[in-house]
Amino acid sequence: MSTVALSFVIPFLNEEKTLRELYERIAKAVVPVLDEGEGFEIVFVDDGSSDGSVAEVEKLVEEHANVRLIELQGNFGKSAALAAGFGQARGRVVFTLDADLQDDPKEIPRFLEKLAEGYDVVSGYKQKRNDPITKVFPSRVFNWMVRRSTGIRLRDVNCGFKAYKKAVLENVRLYGELHRFVPVLAHWKRFRVGEIVVEHHARVHGVSKFGGGRFFRGLMDLITVVFLMKFERRPAHFFGGLGSVTLLAGLGICTYLAVLKAMGEAIGHRPLLSLGVLLVVVGVQILATGLIAELMVHARPDVPFVIRKKSGFAKKELGE
Image 1 (cartoon, rainbow, N blue to C red):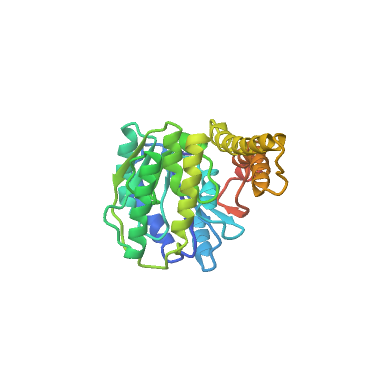
Image 2 (cartoon, helix red, strand yellow):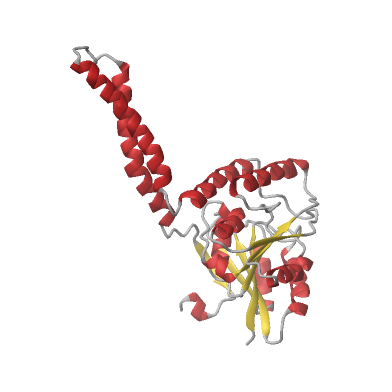
């Protein structure tokens, strides 16, 4: 039995024509860099494919002992698929890359060299992208926004080709569509994050799975990440500040109206009275309900996927 040194977690959705070639390219790149007694594994995660992708991976499972398959119940998204794969990965280093062959496995040794320099996460940078301008331009804008708002210097946070030391994945939780922000979250937890330029190929088979809503979803996730980075350890600084300002504004208005009432003026018909009461109520809600709800959502041990079946796993791993 060889020790699993490297794990490759590869989500796929209708990539039947690329999966076998991807396995062969990874094996060709990895075998020369492994030490004696070390092996590698590939964990394919089906995110609701409707073509012959699952059947193709099942053939690989039968042919190769280091191939494993996780089938999700349906399409849960890339973050859920990666989380499912990370939970089963056994390697000291875990790679992620797309299944469409646009990421080139020949870059794997360079990732390992960068990790050996003391980095915990290494992200690819597609300096020359072979994608249409409708994908490239929004990606450039988004990466600029990430750098400005988080302080991390990655030039291509969207790149799916990344390498992680196992400790990183044990300390970063994925949900929503936060998969692209794992290096940011790792940086926030004081892991060292590096970047290398990688070759990017044009898509030959299949179609892109990301539509026009990707930029908007990424922007919403960026807001979430910035909030978590700045306020997770001290959320009262956010909710307390906003709630206090609202509450004090309401109390100030109500105090002003109380003084007028004491001076004999009628205040029951004033819209300002409704505003003051409303601000007091909203302020209390922000201070109480908002803080508690946000902490509960973030701390909840949610599992954002359902596994239909596993293949290529030992009985012990399957819980039998």
